[in-house]
Image (cartoon, rainbow, N blue to C red; front, side, top):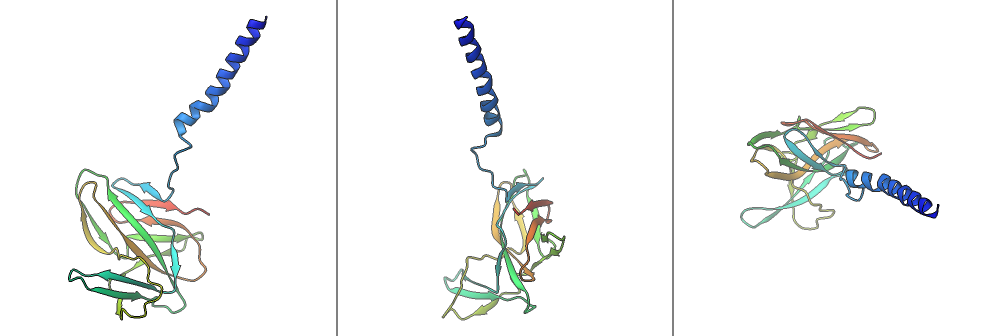
Amino acid sequence: MNTNKILFFIALGSVISALVIIPMIIFKPWITIDPLYVSGKVFYLRITEPLILDEIVFSQKKESGNINSYIIKPENPNYKLAKVDVELTNHSESIVKILIDEKAAELITKSQGRFLPINSVSSSEIINNENLNNVIEFSPLWGSVDLLSYEFIKGSLVFEVPPNINFSQFSWLASDSITIAYKE
């Protein structure tokens, strides 16, 4: 009788252990998944949550070694700028041509309002390098790009948006269709 009880508890313990361990092996809960890193048919897309700013002040080093500073301001004085950092990787086996312009992406609000990126290159005005306040890391992501297989590009898109707005999604539309939901 004691042997049967011992075997019963061993079997029960094995079943309970299997119910816990097997899902952990399959779903790997200890591996964190970046919800802002998603795969499409052609690209892997990683983005950041929008950073809302009154203006964007940034510096870039030119080929000559000189550093130029720039500012981007919203056209509408009542609006703000939303900066989204983007990393785009071509995971296909061929070269992909991408045109990053006003139709390349969208920021979407909960009420389905859609905002398109502004041309961060033509909107950038050169400013004096002295007395720079609020300089941020910024590299304009704009224009035509040919991405080789497994090559990536990184940069920032800028959106002109009303103040006090919450975004629910980011959609990439250039050469692929990828939508990423922001956490609520």
